[in-house]
Image (cartoon, rainbow, N blue to C red):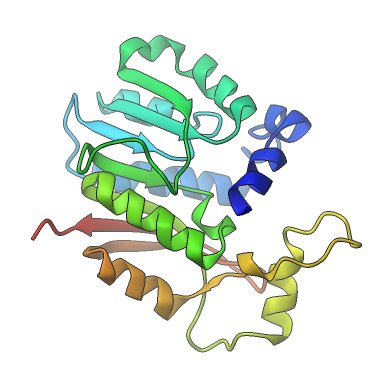
Length: 224
């Protein structure tokens, strides 16, 4: 299962050095700035709940604290979560950090004002992506912040795009290539938003290259 593979992937040295290996990159810094901007556009008030999944090492916890928000952080990796717990210790009861599965979120409908999903949706095959997006929309009361790699409508499936996308997650060349995590067609992603009554409020480009066209979306949920 895709999530089982990811659980094992984010352990050991990868988990211990996760922030150190990324924090100076332009992509990381751009993500950080855009998420902060999106949170400030999400009409959050002190005491509002933000669900962060995967919370990872807790990179956004300081942003939630600055807005006076309570945070529920979920991650499938216990070793990544350990770092988030240490980072979030000063938030006390305003931070609930625990093991959780983005495709089966243990929370009631509309229990969070905003749901933040960064660096996970682009790692899931399309069926798991659909489940995860559906769960984020269900739990959100107003906004979803989603990071997703897409394949533009103008780029056909196959060819160099499929080869590059499938190689991104293959560490051993002898392994069978996993094509399920190739960037999803942009039209399909937008269609999934509409199915879940999610409207794109803002869309910010993070990376545009042959190996990734990566957007952060600020999505508003319609409760009609």
